[in-house]
Length: 358
Image (cartoon, rainbow, N blue to C red; front, side, top):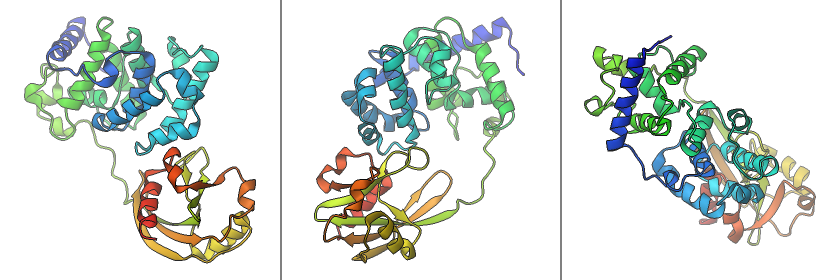
């Protein structure tokens, strides 16, 4: 474990703060008119997502849900629809659930106690520290992806982030170096340095204020830190057959379970292959109908751990099946109303491809 003298801590923080005063980002949408809600929303959206991608989603989300109360009172379908395209939909479900907890238990205010914040769905230690630092003037260390990279390089921290020992050392370093004053600017400086200077593949060391403390710079070992995640085997490929049942201008959609891939979103029903089509229709619709067309390998969608080859069976119905009305997870939806439903990006693409040519 690393240990720093008071002189080392002061030199490090002053270097970061001086750089931030000249080069730091201060005009991002969530940095103006700061509230805990706005900062919380931005921190969740920025998890595994680039700033440029997040900004339009953030602005549109705030327009529709300007307060914790508005988010808590919204229908989950509305929330997921606003998240469409950002991926990692559990983030949106956790946001919605956490807003409901704040509405019910905290009078629609964001809690100010670290233990209360950590008890909310979807908020970990670094996110909680960022919210309380940036919006509530508290002093907490953070350790997002950018900060991890800066600290791992500066102090040649051994091991991949996925190892508990590596994370423990990074947290210990962050705790020691985070000042109790100007914590908000220091934390933002560390995040900005990781995003703008200490880049993943080509760190811009010539413009880095931390070279005086950086062991990787002194030893010319920047390329070795942080250690890369162990290589995985090639992604497995899976196949599915999506069922596009259409009656006049209505499409049959299925709300997926709240946990798992595309959790809580509306999608097309699926079967493993066309051999299971009649069985599925009999079970869920009470009758069978042969597909008008089957589009094979219509789309390949990449998930984190596998790729999915999607084929589509287009089935034109003569009448609405009665059995669907008995299942709350199935609904015939007018094509013009699809924009009001949270759909996975892959399903939106599938519908665009199939409906334009069928």
